[in-house]
Amino acid sequence: MLKMSKLAKAYYTDTVKTQALQPFDLEVQQGEFVAVIGPSGSGKTTFLNIAGLLEEYCEGQYLLDGNDVTGLSDKQKSRLRNEKIGFIFQGFNLIPELNLFDNVEMPLRYRSFSAAERKQRVMDALQQVGLASRKDHYPQQLSGGQQQRVAIARALAGSPAFLLADEPTGNLDSKMADGIMSLLKDINSKGTSILMVTHDTEQASQAQRIIEIKDGVLSERRAQAQAIA
Ligand SMILES: Nc1ncnc2c1ncn2[C@@H]1O[C@H](COP(=O)(O)OP(=O)(O)OP(=O)(O)O)[C@@H](O)[C@H]1O
Image (cartoon, rainbow, N blue to C red; front, side):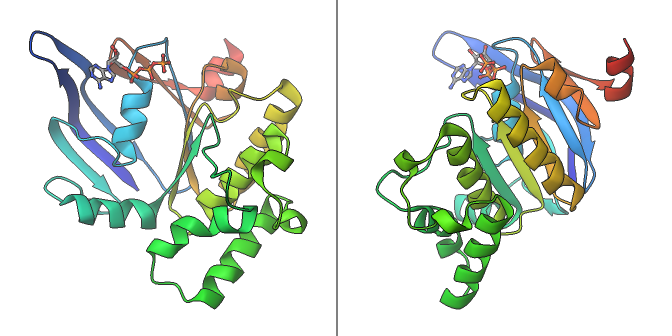
């Protein structure tokens, strides 16, 4: 479970303060699929990066699966992030010099898994996204949708509690995007919580909850209400 209380974020330069996120409370339970929507510059990526321990917050408290994030060292945060969170980015962020197996294995190398367990996890994750037979191929030998599947396998291989996805279908045509949405829903149905930033309202309506951010202010919309409206 993820619990944020009175969390806020501002960026400071010498002359300007940008209040990227106004103080907000949010709880996401294990197994929920939450879409995050809002106009450009409203604070969506800042929110996701804070949830993923990639950015600091300025005020408030954040409990990630019961672990109080406030006051953790960078090393402790890295460990918690690697164990609890899988990331999916719009640009896939695969390493072109590594084959698919090695790309998916990369984050597992920072955990205490044996080589045999790493191999098993990589193959299970590639199997889940339908690309086990391509394990020796390189990212550039795949389509965009397939590359995103590999990125999803990489995010899943460590059995994270949360998947954080920033516009995961932003670089894909609508057919590939539909395939990625089906895969994410399938993963979610097996218990992994998902927080997904999207500008696609149709995709957002497929989530159980919709968080809307406007000028740094978070509010919740009911997905069902949105679909009916
Ligand atoms: N490193 C930074 N320094 C200063 N201001 C920043 C920084 N990063 C983001 N901001 C500001 O914080 C606000 C929120 O930015 P954020 O990237 O979270 O928006 P977003 O909703 O993800 O936008 P988009 O949909 O365009 O990606 C914006 O006003 C942005 O200019």
